[in-house]
Every structure is written in C-alpha cells, then in structure tokens.
Length: 255
Length: 366
Ligand SMILES: Nc1ncnc2c1ncn2[C@@H]1O[C@H](COP(=O)(O)OP(=O)(O)OP(=O)(O)O)[C@@H](O)[C@H]1O
Ligand SMILES: [Mg+2]
Image (cartoon, rainbow over all chains, first blue to last red; front, side, top):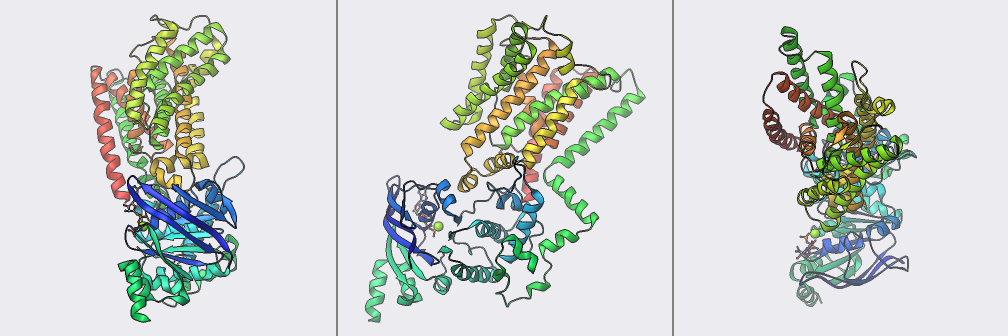
C-alpha cells in the first residue's frame, strides 16, 4: 500500500510542555488507522496538526510522496482532508444546514446561497450517514440538538466533504449503539472507495474491529505502530494503559 | 432509492443495520416535502420566535395601537397622528436610527462593537459638508461614505490585529476621531449653505407628505442588508465568526478578514447615515456631543431587536423593529411632554431588559 500522507519528526510544545515528541508515521491509501492512547497523550493535538488548524513546531509532511511546505487549513482543504474535531466545531446559533455548508456554501455566481438545495442535501446526508433519531428539520438550530445529534451533524459535514482523508477524533463518544455501528460500517466501506481515515477512540474493541493499523501514543511519543494481524486487543489495552512497559510485559508473557 | 444517489451520498450507508427496519422510519427529507401548510406556518413562526423578532414585533404593535387610540381620544393632547409628527417619526427618525442599528448590529453579529460610532458620524458629516461646499454633491457623497469606512477600518485593524477588546479600543479611538473633526474644521460648525440645493434635499431629506426620502433609503438598505446577511455566503461567514470563531477557522474561514469586512460595512452605513443627518440639520458641530447619543441608541436598537451582545445572532427585521420601537417611545415621551432625560433613562433600562430577554431566549433555544 503506497503512502497517502506521511508525517516525520513531528514535535509540538505548548509552553514548557512537549505535547508531541518526534512522532512519525504513514497513512496508506484506503487505510483505516486507529490512533489510540490515554487522556492527554497528544492524539487531538496530532489530529489538529494533520488537519492544518494547529501548526507543528518541527516536522516534515509529504502527501502522495510530494513534500508539503506549509501545513495550514487552506492546504489541507485543497488536499481533501476533512476532520471531525473532538470539541465539535459547530456554531450553536446557526441552523444544521448552515453549519454543514459553513464556508463551503452552494451559491450562484453572485455568492447568494441556494438554501433549498443545501437543505435537501443536508436532510439526505443526515438520513443516510448517521441514522440518528430526533432531528426534525435541517432548519433547526444546532443549539437545540442533543450532544449525540450535534455530533451527527459534525460527522455528516465531514463525510459530505471528505475527498481523500477523513479524520475522526472520538466521533462516537456521544453516539448510541445503532449510530455507532452505522459509522463504523461506513469506515469499512470507505476503504473500498480508496478514502483513508484516521480514527481516534478510547474504545479499543471498536478500533480493533475496523482499523487496519494501530498507532498508540503515550505522553506525546509513538510507542506502538502495528498492523491488525500482528496485534490483539489485549496488547493494545496494555499499551494504552501502561505504555511501553505494558507492551514489553505483554510480549514477554505471551512469548 | 434512486434519487437518493444523486446527492452523492453513499447508498451503502443505509443498508448495514439490522437493528431496525429503517425504511419504515419517517425520514426527514420526506417529512419536509409533505408538511402541511399549517405545520410549515407553525415551524416558521417558531423560527422567527427563536430569533426574538416575534415578541418585539408584538410589543411594537401594541404600543402603536395604544398611541393611535390615545391620539384619537385627544388629538391635541397627544398629537401622534398629526401628519407632521407621523412623517417626522416614521420616515425621518426611524430610518436614521434603523440604518445605524443595522450598522451596529452587523458588527455585533461578527462579535465586535464600535463605540466611536457617534464620533464617526461627526467626522463623516463634516467631510461630507466640506466636500459638498468645495467640490460637488456626488463627490461629497462618496467622500462621506469613504470617511465612515476608513474610520471604521482603522478601528477594526486595531481591534483585529492587537486583540484589544473592541470596547476599549473603539472608546479610546472615539476621542481621537472627535479631535480629528476639530483638526480639519476648527471649532466652528461646518455648515451646508450654497450646496444644499434641490437635488441634495430631494435625495436625502425631501418631505413627500406621508413619507420622506429617508424612508426610501431605509427600504433599499434594509433589503440589501437582508440579502447580504441572511442569503449571501459572506453574511453567513459573519454569523459563523461571531458564533464560534474557532469553528469558522477550522473550516478555513479567516475570522480577521471577516471582522474587517464587518467593520467596513459598519463604516459605510455610518457614513451614509451621517449624510442623512447632515442634510437634515444643515450643519455639524465638530467635537460636539450632538451625535454621541447615537452610539448607545444604535446598539440599543440592535439589542432590542434581538441581536446578541456575544455575537452570532441577530436579524435585519428585528433591528429595524427595534429602532422603530425606540423612536416610537422617544416620540411618545416627547408628545407627553416628559423631560428630555426620561429618554436617556428609558434607553438605558431598555438595553438591560432587552439583553436579559435575549439571554433567556438563548437559554430556551439550547
Ligand atoms: N491549546 C493548548 N494549550 C496548552 N496545552 C494544550 C493545548 N492543547 C492541548 N494541550 C495539552 O496537550 C496535551 C495533549 O492534549 P490532547 O488534547 O492532544 O490529548 P488527547 O490525547 O487528545 O487526550 P483525550 O483522550 O483526553 O482527548 C495535554 O496535556 C493538554 O493539556
Ligand atoms: Mg483528544
């Protein structure tokens, strides 16, 4: 599998804290990569860097084997990266439709929005991608939605605009079983379209179920990078909970 | 099924769940098309209500009814229906405040304030008057509006690039712009004399009996503002940036650029309003306090009309109704011969009540 997106030596400091320390990995074309790790391990920071909303202090990026000089949101937008952020990036007092099409409105040549068209696409996407209950109209304000419903809107937006890479930062944290299942199924399906995805989750069973490869972060460092065939849920659990030490103990115990 | 695919949604997504027969579910897209007229009306009403424009319109209607009854009972004691009074309020005072309210409101939606609005009026009006006297009307119109835009953009640049709260930055700058007025005109009033000809009056202050030129301008500007704010993508970005700057940025909307645009529109509208004010009063006193009240009144009109003090919410209709309400009450107090400070008193209280009300509405929508 050739690499779609490669990160090399990514380092990020917030004040004195080194949040990411020399992190390198690749995302293959059509690959589903699980990004795992304890709270504060640096997953969301890595997600923000990959989607261009936060800039790394150091690190090189290549896309389709061509170097990317400067990572920012305009560049990632052009490359076709879509992200569902953990702190869901929605505007509460705008309607669902306006949130989904924010910054990418369907307009006529003068820049006036085609509201009907956007409303009907919104209804379609919400109906089909995240089959979630209780959203009555695309004209509802996001502020009036439940946590899971709002998350569904964020997912619908990313799914609708994704082209090459879909990054999901704990997308299922507020979803009920049925909607979660639909989303995980969707990720598997994306593979066949050649779209890559990165899934951040604390549910290791979910990760193990859908991801082709797992990356485990610990205090800003990458401590594990394995294909699904070469690992087990138990090893992932040990790595997430106990770090590098856990991996060593698990492997000693097994071999 | 087949028409579903035309929107680019993956059909597979609908299939995988065995937990429930999804096909029997009432789907949102179907429900939308089949909604009865009554249901749609109820939805639309709720829509307006959620945005705070319904209550304020009811208050306005009630007040208006009260005034009409009072004026019918006592035509001389409370001369509201006197044609002079009507055209003065409805098509002179209300349009000017409504245009200023729209200016302040658009900026507030983007999450900023400009407290140098009054000083901007003084300076832009002086620039308009001086240019009209020395060049001609058409250049003067351009100069007046441009002055408003430049003043606002300087304020905007300070706010956006230094990240000083706009309250402080624009309050400070307001003294600077007041001084600038004195700098270019001295301390004597700038006056329209020879240049205040028929064309100028016709354009900006003509009394056509029941309405005046200003009302036409409000209608034009109101429609343009509505199209821009509620239907144009740039207007949409304004709400996004005011409502959640981080979210807007994550979708590659540049908050700084959007805010600067809001300041520029604000300035253009203030510049235009100062032309209306200058032509009506024929003169402008540099460094004077005559225009200072407009700052608070414009923000009051926006807030009373449902604009959020925290950004991200507001409607064109609400702001116009808010301006109308304030001017009606001001007129009522005047007709009832209440002392002038009552008006200031009232506007102060109104802002606070309206802000509390808006806050409650926001809570309800959550
Ligand atoms: N904007 C910021 N300023 C300062 N420190 C930050 C900032 N964002 C994150 N951090 C710190 O960086 C570290 C990693 O945070 P990050 O959000 O990436 O963790 P995470 O792996 O996503 O955790 P979780 O599973 O809880 O979401 C944390 O210690 C956090 O406090
Ligand atoms: Mg996180």
